[in-house]
Image 1 (cartoon, rainbow, N blue to C red):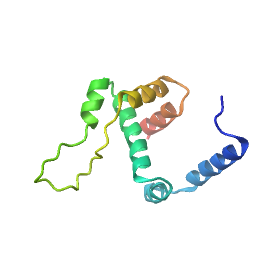
Image 2: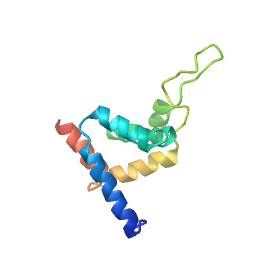
Image 3: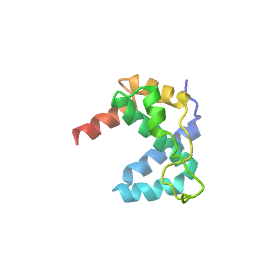
Image 4: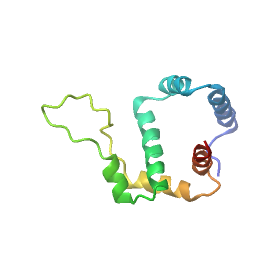
Length: 116
């Protein structure tokens, strides 16, 4: 079941083409910082981190523990690099379901990174 209408599919394909034109990580970073809000980019980052941990064979509990936000105390600066957003078991389940799809995009990306 496709959730996009024809106009949205056309725009999505245009977005994919635009991403494919980017030449390096710096260009990709600039593009995604423009395209996505901080929260949207964090959500994608968390999914990717979850994927990498699943690929390493980590359990749900290990993933949640690994990606838990850093504890802060009143004396620590508020400039922690780690997001304060927790990953949910629902997100882990969704990433794992997609990971288990041998023909899915996650598997393609992981395979190509491993081939590098």
